[in-house]
Length: 264
Ligand SMILES: NC(=O)c1ccc[n+]([C@@H]2O[C@H](COP(=O)([O-])OP(=O)(O)OC[C@H]3O[C@@H](n4cnc5c(N)ncnc54)[C@H](O)[C@@H]3O)[C@@H](O)[C@H]2O)c1
Image (tube, rainbow, N blue to C red):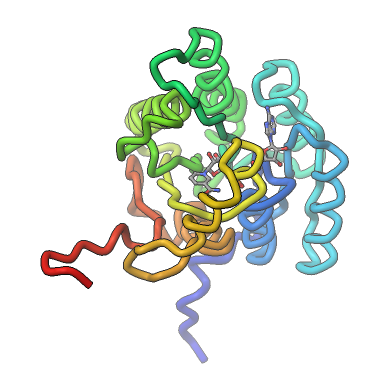
């Protein structure tokens, strides 16, 4: 065999930081990037779970995967994660800003300024700060990328999670601008994620009945997403396979809703 089409997807020699990678979508991304040969640092508020998840991934893939406690809203924690990654792996080539989430607002007409600010800090500003903290190392790396876990709620009306959707929309704009700022040096892309049933839905106050309805979406693929659906898109965007792609926002959401003009 002289041609291996998968070689562009391999990430041996890459060093990854993924935020919020202790569970669910982030853990799926960490596992996939480790599975193609990258060294992965999982930075998560839940440091113990980050370490446990990393140990399991290392065992399964045979590659170095570590966990570290980090609150992405703290600049001190961000700098500590970058320093720890450079010490452990010798650099940072790949940043995945995956942390994000927001609560539901029963009365969208009464969202407080503090709610908006908290949502911006978690979903938007953390990605900016993490990106800038990694930048000196990304600039030295081959195939340097920043890829973000965005949300369909940034692009569609979602008034019951208005502060979250607004912050995610700002993330899209910010990251496309950063892609231009870092042109020819670091590729920057966003994945707009649809419904992936995770613990986050319960934590956000979405009741079991609504969770059940979300589990049977009327989308083009007929099922909710799995963490590995997002992880496979992230793999393309983080690996050399997408070397001609930057400043893009792609939907990974089951293909969108089925539209029928004349009923089912
Ligand atoms: N699940 C979905 O359906 C869905 C849909 C659209 C977008 N997304 C986006 O995908 C990403 C991952 O979603 P998920 O459902 O896997 O989330 P999740 O809530 O299941 O997991 C998020 C992880 O982030 C960690 N975390 C929370 N706050 C943190 C902080 N301040 N600092 C560091 N770590 C922190 C948590 O400990 C957890 O491990 C998020 O950005 C979310 O907005 C998810």
